[in-house]
Amino acid sequence: MKTPSRAFKDAVYEQFARIGKAVSSPKRLELLDLLCQSEKTVESLAHEAGLTLANTSQHLQVLRSARLVDSEREGLYVTYRLSDPMVCEFFRSMRVLAENRLAELEMIKRRFLNGREGMEPVDRESLLQRVIEGHVTLLDVRPEGEYRAGHIPGALSVPLRRLKEILADLPPEQEIVAYCRGPYCVLSVFAVEMLRKEGFNAVRLEEGVQDFRAMGLPIDSEKEAR
Image (cartoon, rainbow, N blue to C red; front, top):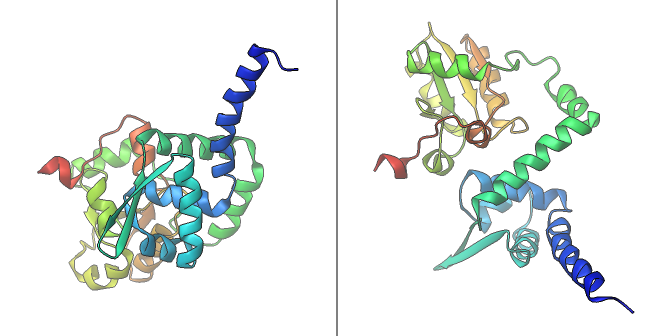
């Protein structure tokens, strides 16, 4: 028979386990990563994560039952957002822990980036100073909605799908730095490859907006600007 103290401890850790169960799926982790960027519709999340609408909805319901995300219906569309900024902090902490403890993660990243030029990490503080001084052109190649929700100061919003359209407007003499959602986002990888093929001196910034926030560096948003 359980003592009151044992029953109390078991009940507490059972609640903690609800979070663990909710994030035990790779796809649910990817959905949280996407929602760290901005609120999104189910359709947008399904497209970004390579899922069917039905599977996306099921995963989101699991995250919602653990109080990690909230939803709101507007007409035919349901929009999801993180229930608390701490959810994104939790996701990033888990990511950093995995990077520090799982050597396989670095091996996977190296295999993907092997042979691709311009993928070397860029010094964050030096980059920000060069942006402020106008010595580099910083491109945010995420979708517009993610840029509006938060971006590195001085960055231009150039979603990857529009990059070819604005190549002629980019200064050929300046270094171009592209960033997206963080070290495992491939949008900036493809952007740098495209830019280098066109003769630009382009490099990739591994860190994303959430990394800059975690380091106490400034982040701009259109909401703040208004």
